[in-house]
Image: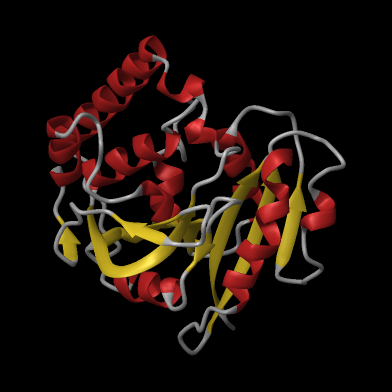
Length: 250
């Protein structure tokens, strides 16, 4: 029986047109022998605008529900997740060749709970741009992400949009934080508080920059909201770090 990695994508109507490109990047993945991928697409809302862009493929499932932002949509998609690993793929992004195989290889190590990779921003003109502060390839020790995040104006050295995580660990932490934004950063810091991670230096994601991108909207950088988000994220990570719980797949 094949082992499964579940790719979870939350989507709202303005980003639906990018789903075919995300799907194409999935079909181009070469997985290790005995592995298959499953794609759980969840609309944040109940419109007629998204389904026409969802491919007809038995590996793809589609769900809808009350609008509640991306964290809730991803969490609802978990109801259909059959895989032992869960990979995040935003609707407007694309995986690079080999990304899922590298995640599976990283998580084959029993002391690793989650994996991330290098990101390339995909600019409107088709060019790409990398991040100049990537950490060394290999393990990311517990607490390292929080330390870097607090020292660099709440910017982590690994990108949460590339996250692949053991499903049981994801469920134990309650999934993505119930925040209006930065919900993936909140999860990343929580994961790093209780387990070692992994960073792959090979680019694993093309992170599309476009006018409709949620993180490009003015509300995303509203100072009062941002301060509150960061405070909750940091406190959760610190509380978990002080706890006696440490995750291991062994």
